[in-house]
Image 1 (spheres, helix red, strand yellow):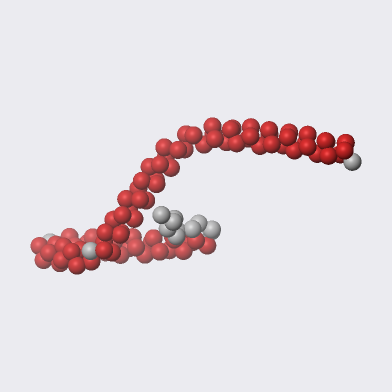
Image 2 (cartoon, rainbow, N blue to C red):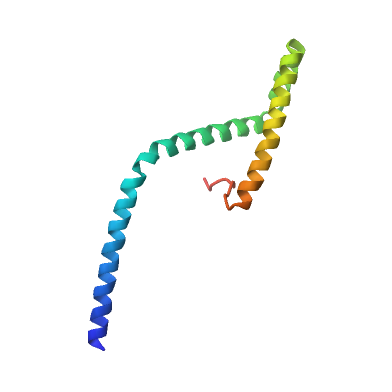
Length: 109
């Protein structure tokens, strides 16, 4: 019985060493992606900040849109259509990505 426990302990130690080596290798392989991920994280944070601002200040946003519509109606209509199409595409993409297992809920702050 003692021999079996010693063998299991040795095997466990070898596995832990192998896991540590794999973690080190994985960290080295993922290092080049860190910059791209950081850029994406900053972009997502900026977009969420902008959306939060729009939600907190609907009156100011509405007045700005109304002013722009009065001054440049064609341009507002054109950008409104683009925004509506982009919103629809985002909803479809989010639904499909959620079905694929991606989670779009906000992380706990």
